[in-house]
Image (spheres, one colour):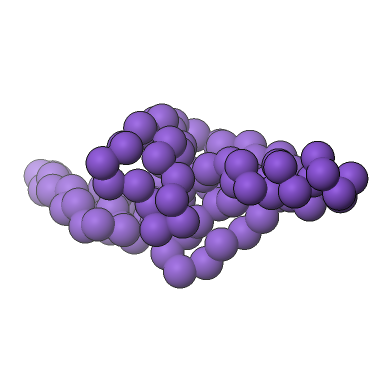
Length: 95
């Protein structure tokens, strides 16, 4: 039986994997403004942001359950201003 290969197509937010599931690229970064605010006020607000599509989730710890890459893009930062972030298609556990 012949199996056909499914070509991966890259979109700006999504990647199709070999089983034709759509995987959302998650971007993880540290919010330096919250770190500064926490140190001034004594608060312990979460400083890690996980962006997935239009959703932002905040946490103190993020575990990436697969491959990832670190991106430094000073000329084209994220909309929040971050110039360094981690990208992954893998599942992430946020706490």
